Amino acid sequence: MIFNQALRRELSFTTGGVFLVLVTIMVTTLVIRILGYAANGAVNPEDALVLISLATLGYLAVLLTVSLFVATLIVLVRWYKDSEMIVWFASGLSITSLIRPILQFAMPLIIIIALLALFVWPWANRESTLISQRFQQRDDVSMVSAGQFRESAKAERVFFIEELDIDKSEVKNIFVADSKNGRLSIAVSATGYIKNSAGGEKSVILHNGRRYEGQPNQPDFRILEFEEYITKVHSKDTLAPPPRDREKTIQELINEPNPAFVNPSRAELLWRIGLPLMALGLVLIAIPLAYVNPRLGNYTAMFYAVLIYLIYSNLLNLTQNFVAKGKVEMLVGIWPIHLLALLIAIVLIRNRINPSLKWWRRQLPAKFSSK
Image (tube, rainbow, N blue to C red; front, side):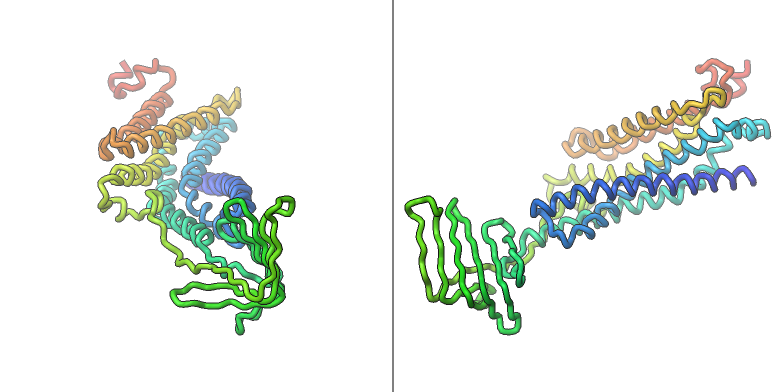
């Protein structure tokens, strides 16, 4: 049917455009935030691109939900404004004729949103945490690089090595600065080597150098010459941090063994299931909400759309918070918000079927409202 084809084509192009704009805004925001973390030493600058990609993947479900809602509104508002809806209504179609083709277009995207929320969201969060933890738990030897000043994970030590022979573990022109308990110690040497000890412990041994200890303007400042100076660095195994709720798989959320974490796990599961349901509710609300008087040509519907999305999203988050605190059971909290959205969509659609009747008569079946 020409009507269905035209509607799906415009929905496809508009959804793609809105999604591209939202992804661009999201990536720009993530670039600023993650580069800020890298500048502060919280993450490795070399991992910034990977972290940005993982964060974008994690938020794809939310971006698709918003794109689907906004695209449906934009297409229908334009049809009303350009009087195309008047032509379709004159051809014998009604507002209920929009429901089926729009849902046929939206359902594949809603399924994708469900898959992203259930599986991609926790995976992306888990990988981001592991990358950050790996950088924060790095050992001091791993950061030694020829010709570069490198800071330890806790910013307590700075290494500089001009030349490094990895095969012989020999180093030349070494600078080591330690800061502990507010006291600065600097050791410099022309030669040295990296020593591996039992138990995985490693040390950097400096030969025939000098050590400066204390503050230059203090009376206890000392300059010492040494034949051999050992600074120990400990190789630490990267420990996998305990997963947060947002990083757990569906099976881990359902089979949570710790009673203290059962409610937060149920709350996270409620949010993941609620996201595709919210996408469905927003699409149904968008159909009657898009009505615009062609003579006025305003976009008041977009203002209401933003308001409805914020209320819907905050109610979902509020329910998640109640479930996490044990105030509401998951099976009780998962349906009221989405049922309310469905009822609002039904009421708005019936209001648009016959706008000449009073609003309360529009809610009655046709055989009663016609009397």
